[in-house]
Amino acid sequence: MDRTFAQMLCDRAEYEPDTVAFYSWEGGVQRSTSWREYVEEVREATLGLHSLGVLPGDRVGIMSSSRREWIIAALAILSMDGVIVGIFPTSSTSELTHSLENSQATAVFVETASEIAKVTSAALELPQLRAIIGFDSRPTSHPESVTATSWRSLRDAGAERAKSEPRLFTDLVESGNIDHPAALFSTSGSTGAPKGVVHTHRTLQYSVDAFAMSYPEIGRKRHDLVGFLGLSHVAPALVGVFAPIMTRLVITYCTMDQRVEALIGVRPTAVVWPPRMHEKLASETLQALSESSRGFRFKYSIAMKVARKVNAFRWRGHTVPRYLEALYRRCSRVVFLPLRAKVGMDRIQVSWTASGSMTPEVAALWQMWGVDLRELFGTTETCGSVVAQWDRPFPKPGTIGKCMPDPRWAVRVSHEGELQLRSPGLFTGYWRNPEATSAALKDGWYGTGDLVELAPDGEVKIIGRMNDVFKTSGGKAVSPQPIEVKLKSSPLVDEAIVVGDGRKYLTVLLAAGDKAREMGSDERDAAIARWIDEVNSELARPLQVKKFRVLPRELSAAGGELTLKATIRRANVLASFSDLVDEMYDADEYDQIARHTRIPGTGHE
Image (tube, rainbow, N blue to C red):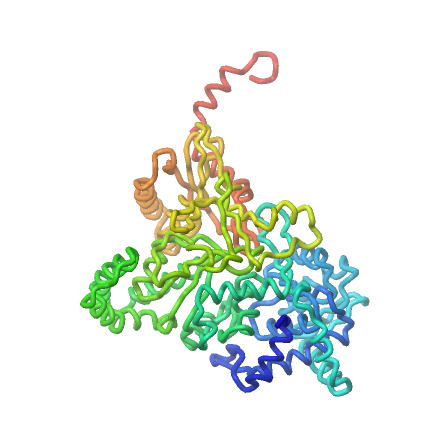
């Protein structure tokens, strides 16, 4: 049966009204919301929007961190047959204006007072914007053409409307269409202005299906997740907003600042995080290990020897010997589970990573600790995964897996080595940008821009980005991403940007990691130099890094060096730190040429 998400929400509330739909983390405890309560709140918000003049097909923005109001607002928009426009809370006023102007949003939900100020400032340039709804408070300053209200007032108005027109909500929901746009997600904007990626109810549902194909258990029994990542991103929205309506996922929503407290309190059974979050939590776990007793650290060293042997069998696809399996279970019970419990990861049954390049060493460490960490691969345009490590537990790190086991999902590699994808979850186009849509979609295939190697068994390995490939002055084509991933596998390095386009050798700009920031500059530079030597020993000579510089400050979105999704804008970073780049290249040979080409009397002397 073709049903929209709003229609499925109402079906779920009718089928199991008193079952917990989701939790929110408030005051250090979980607050539950049943499916019945979920629909009632969505009903009030929907009719409140209707009273503000929001019409079917309207785009409505949500600018907020992860919280319960985000998903209720999202389902209210969908109940109106409207379109969700996720806006990053860290957006500048100009970025916010672009999102609202490009989407032609008629209303926007906003979280904090500072974000409300940005919206009211932008509203002067947005004649189509008619309403601003504050989650925490009512906007106090706004253009006369804009109606401002609070979340509480919106729901109160909707509740009154429900009394006077008891059939209105049902009529609105049932008039929805599964093939109408449901959400606009922004691309990263790493190579230009962000584009709005259009997904319908149908493409989003196929994306949930792909996620469920990766781990069918989420459709069979309850799994708890902690949702603290921004729901304006496509992957957190898929997992945190849409998948729970179709599966047995139960999310506890909290802010990024609450994540450690919530992880320990909830003890989730599954996670879906970008690589950086796995890296940060591994670092926090190792910090907890360093603060434990000498006796526990000794047990840990023994347990890790056992874990390495177990992983060697797993990665070769061999059965772990019974004696070794029994020994590992004891190590897990005595060492790894207590260690993981310190960061709330002791109940994890499966952990997924997506939205970036996962450092193999980090993935291996979590697997040794007993977490079945697997890779997913998708893009904003595919929403859900098309490639994943779905076929066996504890897969060997280093690939993104295989194509989904359904013929409607397919992969191929172009002559240039680009990964191209086809799936029923593909976006329907870029919003108001047919030229970009035509360039991205060719005969139903989407070009990802990723350079890959495709093994005979179907395993896909990413080796870089097409746009990032450069040539040295010697003509050597270099994909910097694999080198950068190797460099970032040390706690000394947070970010790495390899340089070498048109140069005679490779260098790298580094953002210092946690371990490096604890050192003095001389000690830090010596440690980093040793680490680079170690990485270079695994690289062919033309790919070895000759020099490095540590960035004097953090990269920032405000400075144009990061997108709002924290993707590096490589060209902008090189421009911001051009002086450091120039320092790393010997200018003597260029000076000699310049001296020989100076012509007296021409001013070039």
